[in-house]
Length: 227
Image 1 (cartoon, helix red, strand yellow):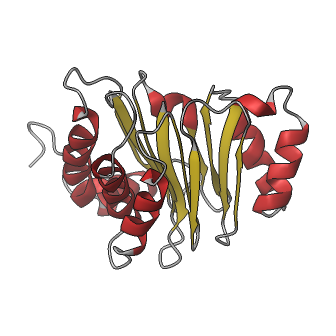
Image 2 (tube, helix red, strand yellow):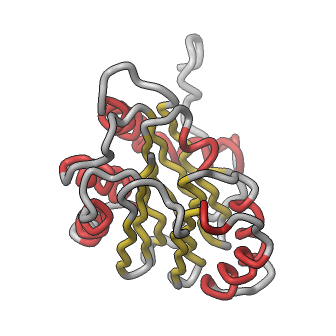
Protein backbone atom coordinates (compact mmCIF):
# COMPACT_ATOMS: atom_id res chain seq x y z
CA UNK A 1 0.00 0.00 0.00
CA UNK A 2 3.07 2.26 0.01
CA UNK A 3 5.94 3.63 -2.01
CA UNK A 4 8.80 5.72 -0.69
CA UNK A 5 12.25 7.14 -1.31
CA UNK A 6 14.86 7.26 1.46
CA UNK A 7 17.91 9.38 0.68
CA UNK A 8 20.97 11.46 1.61
CA UNK A 9 21.91 14.74 -0.07
CA UNK A 10 25.73 14.69 -0.26
CA UNK A 11 25.92 18.47 -0.81
CA UNK A 12 23.97 19.52 2.28
CA UNK A 13 24.25 16.41 4.43
CA UNK A 14 20.48 16.40 4.82
CA UNK A 15 18.73 13.05 5.20
CA UNK A 16 15.12 12.46 4.31
CA UNK A 17 12.19 10.30 3.31
CA UNK A 18 9.18 10.93 1.12
CA UNK A 19 6.40 8.37 1.38
CA UNK A 20 2.84 7.93 0.16
CA UNK A 21 0.10 5.34 0.63
CA UNK A 22 -3.53 4.45 0.16
CA UNK A 23 -3.80 4.15 3.95
CA UNK A 24 -4.11 6.97 6.45
CA UNK A 25 -1.24 8.95 8.02
CA UNK A 26 1.52 6.97 6.33
CA UNK A 27 4.39 9.24 7.37
CA UNK A 28 3.52 8.91 11.05
CA UNK A 29 4.17 5.17 10.88
CA UNK A 30 6.78 4.72 8.17
CA UNK A 31 9.31 7.60 8.08
CA UNK A 32 12.15 7.91 10.60
CA UNK A 33 15.12 10.29 10.24
CA UNK A 34 17.83 11.43 12.64
CA UNK A 35 20.21 14.30 11.90
CA UNK A 36 23.79 13.17 11.33
CA UNK A 37 22.78 9.52 11.68
CA UNK A 38 20.55 8.24 8.91
CA UNK A 39 17.06 7.52 7.66
CA UNK A 40 14.92 4.39 7.94
CA UNK A 41 11.68 3.61 6.12
CA UNK A 42 9.54 0.86 7.70
CA UNK A 43 6.59 -0.12 5.51
CA UNK A 44 4.33 -2.86 4.10
CA UNK A 45 2.68 -4.53 7.13
CA UNK A 46 4.26 -1.80 9.17
CA UNK A 47 6.01 -2.09 12.53
CA UNK A 48 6.85 1.52 13.50
CA UNK A 49 9.22 0.27 16.20
CA UNK A 50 11.71 -0.77 13.53
CA UNK A 51 12.46 2.81 12.52
CA UNK A 52 13.90 4.02 15.84
CA UNK A 53 15.65 0.67 16.34
CA UNK A 54 17.37 1.01 12.99
CA UNK A 55 18.44 4.58 13.78
CA UNK A 56 19.87 3.42 17.10
CA UNK A 57 22.02 0.83 15.31
CA UNK A 58 23.26 3.53 12.93
CA UNK A 59 23.96 5.88 15.85
CA UNK A 60 26.04 3.13 17.46
CA UNK A 61 28.38 3.29 14.45
CA UNK A 62 27.00 0.56 12.19
CA UNK A 63 26.86 1.31 8.45
CA UNK A 64 23.59 0.69 6.65
CA UNK A 65 23.91 -3.01 5.83
CA UNK A 66 25.16 -4.16 9.25
CA UNK A 67 22.42 -2.04 10.81
CA UNK A 68 19.87 -3.78 8.59
CA UNK A 69 21.24 -7.18 9.56
CA UNK A 70 21.02 -6.30 13.24
CA UNK A 71 17.51 -4.90 12.79
CA UNK A 72 16.25 -8.04 11.06
CA UNK A 73 17.80 -10.17 13.79
CA UNK A 74 15.48 -8.47 16.30
CA UNK A 75 12.35 -8.88 14.15
CA UNK A 76 9.94 -11.76 14.75
CA UNK A 77 8.10 -11.34 11.42
CA UNK A 78 10.63 -10.25 8.77
CA UNK A 79 8.65 -11.79 5.91
CA UNK A 80 5.95 -9.14 6.41
CA UNK A 81 8.30 -6.15 6.49
CA UNK A 82 9.72 -3.87 3.83
CA UNK A 83 12.62 -1.73 5.04
CA UNK A 84 15.07 0.80 3.60
CA UNK A 85 18.09 2.35 5.31
CA UNK A 86 20.44 5.14 4.27
CA UNK A 87 23.26 6.11 6.62
CA UNK A 88 25.00 9.48 6.91
CA UNK A 89 27.69 8.41 4.42
CA UNK A 90 25.16 7.46 1.76
CA UNK A 91 25.47 3.70 2.24
CA UNK A 92 22.20 1.89 1.59
CA UNK A 93 20.45 -1.34 2.57
CA UNK A 94 17.03 -2.79 1.94
CA UNK A 95 14.80 -5.71 2.82
CA UNK A 96 11.56 -6.79 1.16
CA UNK A 97 10.01 -9.81 2.84
CA UNK A 98 8.49 -12.75 1.02
CA UNK A 99 5.03 -11.70 2.24
CA UNK A 100 5.25 -8.13 0.97
CA UNK A 101 1.82 -7.26 -0.40
CA UNK A 102 0.95 -7.43 -4.08
CA UNK A 103 3.55 -6.28 -6.57
CA UNK A 104 6.58 -5.29 -4.50
CA UNK A 105 9.82 -3.83 -5.84
CA UNK A 106 12.98 -1.99 -4.78
CA UNK A 107 15.36 0.25 -6.75
CA UNK A 108 18.72 1.70 -5.72
CA UNK A 109 20.63 4.81 -6.68
CA UNK A 110 23.61 6.70 -5.25
CA UNK A 111 22.66 7.44 -1.66
CA UNK A 112 19.03 6.45 -2.08
CA UNK A 113 16.60 3.51 -1.87
CA UNK A 114 13.10 3.42 -3.34
CA UNK A 115 10.70 0.69 -2.25
CA UNK A 116 7.05 -0.09 -2.77
CA UNK A 117 4.34 -2.68 -2.35
CA UNK A 118 0.87 -3.14 -3.84
CA UNK A 119 2.22 -1.26 -6.83
CA UNK A 120 0.39 -0.81 -10.11
CA UNK A 121 3.70 -1.42 -11.89
CA UNK A 122 6.99 -2.95 -10.76
CA UNK A 123 8.85 -0.05 -12.39
CA UNK A 124 7.54 2.54 -9.93
CA UNK A 125 10.59 2.47 -7.58
CA UNK A 126 12.94 2.88 -10.55
CA UNK A 127 10.93 5.95 -11.59
CA UNK A 128 11.41 7.45 -8.13
CA UNK A 129 15.17 6.92 -8.29
CA UNK A 130 15.39 8.32 -11.80
CA UNK A 131 13.55 11.52 -10.82
CA UNK A 132 15.75 11.88 -7.76
CA UNK A 133 18.94 11.51 -9.80
CA UNK A 134 17.74 13.94 -12.48
CA UNK A 135 17.21 16.76 -9.95
CA UNK A 136 20.59 16.84 -8.23
CA UNK A 137 20.85 20.63 -8.33
CA UNK A 138 17.70 20.97 -6.21
CA UNK A 139 17.48 20.77 -2.39
CA UNK A 140 16.67 17.38 -0.91
CA UNK A 141 13.04 18.19 -0.10
CA UNK A 142 12.34 19.17 -3.69
CA UNK A 143 14.04 16.05 -5.02
CA UNK A 144 11.99 13.84 -2.72
CA UNK A 145 8.68 15.42 -3.71
CA UNK A 146 9.62 15.11 -7.38
CA UNK A 147 10.34 11.44 -6.79
CA UNK A 148 6.83 10.85 -5.42
CA UNK A 149 5.33 12.69 -8.37
CA UNK A 150 7.33 10.52 -10.77
CA UNK A 151 6.23 7.38 -8.98
CA UNK A 152 2.60 8.37 -9.31
CA UNK A 153 3.09 9.18 -13.01
CA UNK A 154 4.66 5.74 -13.50
CA UNK A 155 1.51 4.06 -12.18
CA UNK A 156 1.71 4.53 -8.43
CA UNK A 157 -0.21 2.11 -6.28
CA UNK A 158 -2.82 -0.39 -7.34
CA UNK A 159 -5.31 1.72 -5.33
CA UNK A 160 -5.70 5.50 -4.89
CA UNK A 161 -3.06 7.40 -2.95
CA UNK A 162 -4.66 8.99 0.12
CA UNK A 163 -1.78 10.15 2.36
CA UNK A 164 1.77 11.41 1.89
CA UNK A 165 4.61 12.85 3.93
CA UNK A 166 8.02 14.49 3.69
CA UNK A 167 10.53 14.23 6.55
CA UNK A 168 13.95 15.90 6.30
CA UNK A 169 16.65 16.28 8.97
CA UNK A 170 19.47 18.82 8.71
CA UNK A 171 22.19 19.55 11.26
CA UNK A 172 19.95 20.13 14.27
CA UNK A 173 18.18 17.55 16.41
CA UNK A 174 14.66 18.41 15.28
CA UNK A 175 13.09 17.85 11.87
CA UNK A 176 13.96 20.60 9.37
CA UNK A 177 10.84 19.64 7.43
CA UNK A 178 8.01 17.42 8.68
CA UNK A 179 5.09 17.86 6.31
CA UNK A 180 2.12 15.49 6.23
CA UNK A 181 -1.09 15.00 4.34
CA UNK A 182 -2.73 12.43 6.59
CA UNK A 183 -5.81 11.93 4.39
CA UNK A 184 -7.02 13.34 1.10
CA UNK A 185 -10.53 12.68 -0.16
CA UNK A 186 -9.55 13.10 -3.80
CA UNK A 187 -7.97 9.91 -5.23
CA UNK A 188 -4.24 10.51 -5.76
CA UNK A 189 -4.61 14.06 -4.39
CA UNK A 190 -2.25 13.60 -1.43
CA UNK A 191 0.94 14.08 -3.42
CA UNK A 192 -0.32 17.30 -5.01
CA UNK A 193 -1.28 18.56 -1.55
CA UNK A 194 2.19 17.66 -0.25
CA UNK A 195 3.70 19.59 -3.17
CA UNK A 196 1.75 22.71 -2.09
CA UNK A 197 2.85 22.33 1.53
CA UNK A 198 6.47 21.97 0.46
CA UNK A 199 6.30 25.06 -1.76
CA UNK A 200 4.96 27.07 1.18
CA UNK A 201 7.44 25.63 3.66
CA UNK A 202 10.62 25.78 1.56
CA UNK A 203 11.21 29.58 1.67
CA UNK A 204 10.72 29.85 5.44
CA UNK A 205 12.25 26.61 6.74
CA UNK A 206 15.63 28.13 7.62
CA UNK A 207 13.97 31.03 9.44
CA UNK A 208 12.60 28.59 12.01
CA UNK A 209 16.10 27.26 12.61
CA UNK A 210 17.36 30.81 13.19
CA UNK A 211 14.50 31.48 15.61
CA UNK A 212 15.55 28.47 17.65
CA UNK A 213 19.30 29.11 17.65
CA UNK A 214 19.45 32.92 17.77
CA UNK A 215 16.14 34.71 18.32
CA UNK A 216 17.89 38.10 18.15
CA UNK A 217 18.76 37.43 14.50
CA UNK A 218 15.38 36.01 13.56
CA UNK A 219 13.15 37.60 10.94
CA UNK A 220 9.62 38.54 11.87
CA UNK A 221 7.59 35.73 13.36
CA UNK A 222 4.83 36.01 10.80
CA UNK A 223 1.99 36.67 13.25
CA UNK A 224 -0.36 39.68 13.43
CA UNK A 225 1.25 42.57 15.31
CA UNK A 226 4.82 41.42 14.62
CA UNK A 227 5.98 43.60 11.76
